[in-house]
Length: 381
Image (cartoon, rainbow, N blue to C red; front, side):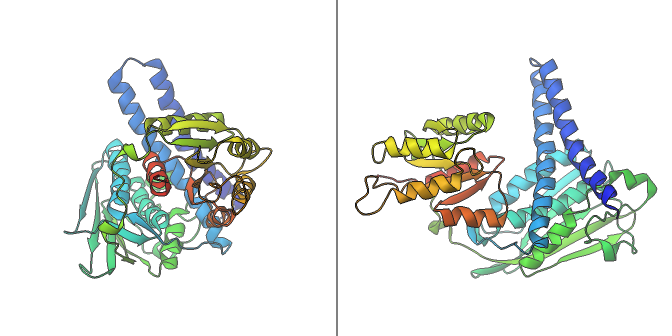
């Protein structure tokens, strides 16, 4: 495919959800007192935003794979909660497209596992996204998650997505996972397009996890995609429960963020958790505020990475350097410093850890994830 065609296709895929978001926002402004209209538009904005984020994540992840920089994260996470979040998005997307969506999981499906949550979510998102895009009004999408092992620590999970869409021709199947290829089966469906990177990224991600994606399809009659992945199951009792916002009430959080809108959003979320919030617009100011404060005044720091004057990595290193034996900031080595950044590459995560941060969260901000991470690292005394 020619470079101009690639740019045109990606531009189209970015502009389509952006157009929806801007148009729906305009409708809200024109009908602020119509609660049903506002609720419907807000729901559709959320769905369009998820599709836009998915494309951005695909492009970033593809760059990682092509640069040989992709690595697997091995963190504990709530598998059922992650799946539920994905299901919510595609239930809404299916409803908007006039499709019937169903999700089933096997009995006694475990809750917590250890593995790469983001890449597993990305694989499932890309397969479901295609099932919605290449489907027909009145059609169906069936998503299943099955624990194939049923017992033991190492479990093999099978995720499958079946749809009644346009299907894939035999000629197209060998090229299905090639970059910038799409499976338009007939002229009337060619406008469905797609950027042609979703399945490429999904395939590379599942290979990194030691598995592969399988496809069964009949042109004009739908497709089934499935893959198996083996993950260690974590005993729920070993996971620190975070069920109450009381864990964060009264805690003082320093937020370093140069974008005023993002700073406002983070402040709003933290205050909804019961936190006291102080802000800085760059790393230098954050360092100055921390240095001038009484020991243990701040309970945590949320740090953007790309900021003017002094970035978040340098600021973190300088804060950590204030601690240690004989230093006047005894909490400098202990205070949780959480990266909240648009830098989403695996290499970026590695840099934040090397700088002395405790965790790396990516924008857009996930309120539940922000709360969970803060509560997990927060000093209790």
